[in-house]
Every structure is written in structure tokens, then in C-alpha cells.
Length: 337
Ligand SMILES: NC(=O)c1ccc[n+]([C@@H]2O[C@H](COP(=O)([O-])OP(=O)(O)OC[C@H]3O[C@@H](n4cnc5c(N)ncnc54)[C@H](OP(=O)(O)O)[C@@H]3O)[C@@H](O)[C@H]2O)c1
Image (cartoon, rainbow, N blue to C red; front, side, top):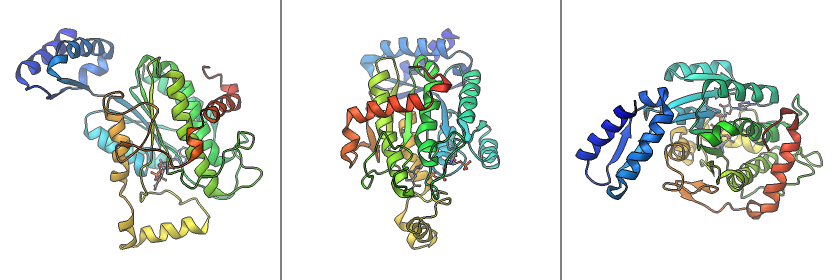
């Protein structure tokens, strides 16, 4: 196995001009990723001066891959030869995307932390190696609703569930030197996050609850980087732009309904991006190499590091506090510390 990979790389090195990207396709990778990883490392070092890069086909888990940005990213990454794992909430939509791609799929409703734990166990059993976890599932919902776990739905689906999923996959992610990517949003209009009122009990507004959750995605990314980058994990969050998807179909706020009406209009839709355009950022981060192509811990928009337009996004104590509070809230699932 190692010989085969080494021979391919040697042949490519002999033929390829300096700077040519070298792609080692996936068949060997599935069967012996450890060997290929080792071989790639040797080949990279040998050809370092020549700047030939070895691009490995990755195992990429995408939540929220049954629709919109996640489905578009899954299609693109599948076309790029990666092994895409489709996770969704709706069994029908999830199956449709997975069948189209010939991909493995998993159904989990993030309003149920038991589902998240089962998803993590299933993924751990099926994939000893995960290169990328894309925490993309999320959305804005209607009036304040409690999940079966007792948390406000927007907070749980957008932050707490992906936090738990990442925690439960941590050993695999560290061993895989994985990238963990969060689909966040613009946080320009997000009001203050209060660690003592993460469920917005004092005052609930669906738009603000959503904004807070997306800011939590950014803080989680930074804290994940601070805690685990030295152990091999890289993390990034991003804003996909305003994208026409199923986003907001469950929202009841008049402003969101108005935006959806504008997006449904042939002229109005020119103001929005397509799911494929929205997925570009996710796919670019997933395919890229942290440290070379992108910076771990950072927030991206249109393939560039961007400063989140919210002062709380730079509050390290808040990021640490959110991590610790989130750990307490999911402690019955015994995540790693
Ligand atoms: N569209 C935008 O303009 C925009 C802007 C900024 C950020 N975002 C973010 O982009 C991400 C993807 O959204 P989208 O725009 O592609 O919208 P979408 O078409 O509605 O996709 C949302 C995805 O999340 C899944 N999901 C929703 N609730 C879930 C739950 N309770 N449990 C598990 N999965 C759940 C959905 O699953 P099912 O389809 O199976 O129900 C779907 O796959 C979200 O995190 C969203 O906040 C979107």
C-alpha cells in the first residue's frame, strides 16, 4: 500500500512542474489512511523544496446537509472526490441528497440531545478517521420554544447541539488532526450574550436569539482553537452571505417573512446568493489546509479573514465562559473536558 502511494507520488513528482498540485485519489485512503498519511508526509517532505503539494481526498461530515448551503457543499465536495457524510433532520430530504451522491447518511434532530449523542456514536463507529466536521445545521425559528432537553430551541439547535457533537467526536477529531467548521452569520446586529440567560428567558426575540447563537458559533470556534489547536484540531467559522435556501421557513417574525417574499421574487432574488455561492466558503475551508490556506480560529467571509462586527466576538473571557457553561449543560453526556 505504502509502495503504491509512494510510486504514484514519485511518478507525479518526476513529471509535474514545480508548484503543481498533486492529487492522490481516495481508494487507498479509505483502506489505509494511516499508511497514506505517513506516505504523504514523507512525500511532502521530500518534495518540499519543489513546492508540490499532496492533496488528500478527505472524509467530510456535514450537518444540515439535507438542504440549502449544506446540500450544495455536499454536492460540490462529492464532485471533488471526497467522501461526504450527509447528516440531516428530515429523513426524506436527507435520504434524497445521500441517494443522489451515493453517500452515507444519518438522521438526527438537534432539538434532542439524545439524537446528537447517537449521531456521534454512529459516526465514531463508522469513521475511525474524520478530516472535517462541518457544523452547518441551524436556523431561525418561531416563538420561544423549549426542547425536550429544556433549552431554548434556537440556542440548542445552533450552538449546544454542535458543541456536544464536537465534544463527543473530540478523540477522533484530534487523532485525525481535523478541521471543525461552523456556519455562522453576520453578527452586526447581535445584542449582548448573557451566560446566565442563554435561553433568553428575560426577553425573547427570535431574530436576537438567532444572532446570539451565531455569535456563539464564532466564540466556540475561537475557544476550540485555543484549547485544541496544539493537539491538532483547526477551527474556522464563516458567514455565507444572504442565501436563498429554506432558511426562515419556520420563522414567524414579519421581517423574515418579508425577506423570504423578496427572495421569491425574480427581481428580488438578485439581492441574494444561490446555495452554491453560499456553499463556496464551506467547501473552500473543508478542502483547504489550515495553516496554508486558512488561519485556525478565524472568521471568514468570501475566502478572507474578516473581523466580526460585534465587540463580544473578541471577548476571550466570554468565549471561555460559554465553553464552560455549555459543558455543564451537556455534562450528562460525559463529553471530554
Ligand atoms: N441562508 C442564509 O442566508 C444564511 C445566512 C447566514 C447563516 N446561515 C446559516 O447557514 C446554515 C445552513 O442554513 P441554510 O441557509 O442552508 O438553511 P436550510 O436550507 O434551512 O438548511 C438548514 C439545515 O439545517 C438542518 N436543521 C434545521 N433544524 C434542525 C434540527 N432541529 N436538527 C438537525 N438539523 C436541523 C436542516 O435539516 P432538514 O432540511 O433535514 O430539516 C437543513 O439541513 C444555518 O446554520 C444557518 O443559520 C444561513
